Structure formats: structure tokens, C-alpha cells
Image (cartoon, rainbow, N blue to C red; front, side):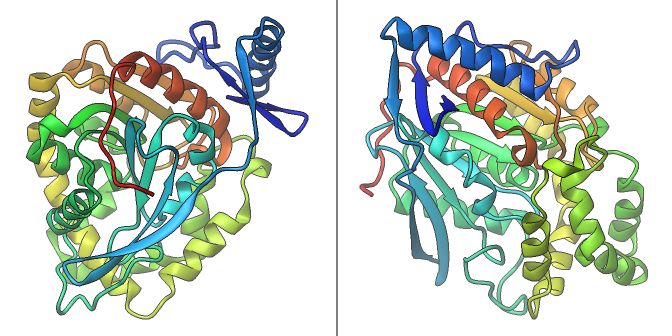
Length: 350
């Protein structure tokens, strides 16, 4: 799906769209759009394109799960194949706001905020356990409440630990994985993780330092920009809004508790890898190569478990949709058109 002159065109035949490859240098974003736009125009000339508005039909909802109000964004036809989009830290479902309209013509997209994130409730840590097991359980109950019986999982950062727990609990529900800078292998953890491992070893001695790093404005900015050579492409509203979120009363304790539990994710990597090898879910890996936290080795590692995995390095950072949402939409659509052509996912009415 490509925009031109304020209009959006849906490409039905995506086989000829430009590819990114893990083994080689990805095409520049502008080159991709120019080549893709040329293809769209040729298809439209052959009456194979469908003109449609760029405006999404995204709606905003909240439902109670375990007494906690869970906010979520929803777009697309309820009868279409479902994509459950799981966000990272310290973001929320808002990180998918630009992607959802680009897929909503065919796919049913559901993007919740975890407890303690975004517009969902943030219960006191004294009465709500902020662990990844608990977040996954809440999102599992959330998906059941919406009657999502089959779905592709789109996983980013913290979405990986939540999503892999869902996949282990209900492998029959998962029809495909789209992984965007979400780690399931030790080599994906870069040098920054040495200080974070020290926090896991001795929380008391390292918590103050970790909080200062996790909740500072500069660290919040760097999570987006990373080492990108094009910082001008990044909207500063993304990190100023996230900084405001992290500055809310009680949020530092919530995020400290949850990140202390992150050690359970690293310990779970062998189980996640075993799931991948056993079930071989169709897997698309989209990796922003300027990520300061997760290395590109973490992208390549998925092929050890799923040899047919598609892996694409993007000219982008940790939150790759900041800089490469068009490419991500194209690649996701290509992948899902092939994998979900016969899927008709039962979903809740909008």
C-alpha cells in the first residue's frame, strides 16, 4: 500500500515489490518508495490497483480484565485475518498508530496497552504483580474476551516476552509471527545489557542507577534515535510523550519491578527457541539496524530455529516504525498475503 498525491493505493500483486535482505545492504527508504510507487502506478494503469482513502477506521476501546481496564486500538474488518500487535517499552499501542491504517483494508488489527502502560490502568505494584508471566496472562484473557481464536502476532521489544508466552500456551492460535526488534537469543543482547544484568544480580545496589537511566529524557530519546544517521526523521513527540508517561506517579516502581523480572525472559530463551523449532511458525523478522540495545545478530539467530524465516534489516532504529513504517507495511503485507491467504479469523465485532 503506497501513498501518492494524498491518495492510497492497495497493491494486490506484491511479488515484485522491493526486498530487504539480511545478508546484504538494504535499499534506502527513498529508493524503495520510488521503486514501489512506480510499480503502483503501473498496476493502477492496468486496473490492478484499488484506490482508497488514507484515513483509517481505527477505533478506541477499553474492557476490564482481572479488574483492570485494558485499553486497545482496533482497525480493519472484523471478519478479516487478525493481527495481535504487542508493543514495547516504554511505548504503548500508540507505536502502531501509523502502521494500522496501512493494513486495515484487509486485516483485523488489535493493539492493547499492557497494565501499567499507555491508557490501561496502572494498579499499585503492592497489589498487582508486574511480571511478564502476569502481563501475558492478562493479554491472554484479553484476547479471549475479544474472541480472538486465531491470529498473527506482531511482536516488538517487550511484545516478544508477552507474545512468546502466548504462543507457548496456545500454539494452535498462532498462524504467523512478525518480529520487530524483539529478542529470543542471547546474542541479540548488546553491550548495554551488562549493566542491566548487574541489576538482576543485585537489585538493591543497582536500582537507583537503573531507574535514572530508564526514566531519563535522554535515554528515552536514544531508544528511538539510536545511531541512526538521519535523526531528523524522528518525531520528538514520541519520546517526550513517553517521558511524560514514565514520569507519572508510581511508574518508576512499576517499570523497575517489570524490568527486574526481565531476567526470566533470558532464562526462557531456550523454551522459546524450542517452540520455534517444533512448530516452525511462518516468521518474518524486521530489524532496525540502528538499535542501541538489540544487535542485528539477534535477527539472524531466528534462522537457526526457523530456517525459512524471512529476515530484513531496515534503515531504522529500535522503534523501526518511526523511520520505516512504509517498508514495514509493504513487507508485512507481502508476508501475510502469502501466509494467511486462506485464513478467515473469527473475531469480535467492532
